[in-house]
Length: 212
Image (tube, rainbow, N blue to C red):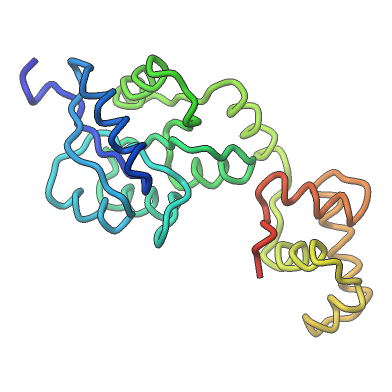
């Protein structure tokens, strides 16, 4: 196949085994050509300045720039570039943030070779690809009312076990105002109490135990 008819692919993943495996696997496909692989977001952006890329396959968890930041930067450099997320993570928030940033497909790393190749062809044809379980999680997340930045902040405090009075003291607001924020969080997450709100938020990827 002439080079100008190949789908040119950039792989962005901080694990060398993953990069090597994808390069080898996709290299067996006659219509695909891996132009390069990058271990960081910054390295990927440098490659985009040097090579013509049609589809980028991007991991979400990487040192320095995370996957969502990489996706956003790639989209700003060229709107015609298509992006596939390939990751081990499938929380509602991971999926939602990736799609909001501009991902056209979202796959897990245990996805079959056939489905990965199909996804590349679909996104290159200006279509999207989300497996059923990913599409269901995305639909659930979109249906929920988004938390405000202040509610995210309070949710992190709930996960640490702070009371309404302690939250109010930290944020410089009244205990009653803190309670209203907590009630709003409980309603938006569709849970029964503050403890379930914290555990649900962690499970959905809204916060992590390492958040400050």
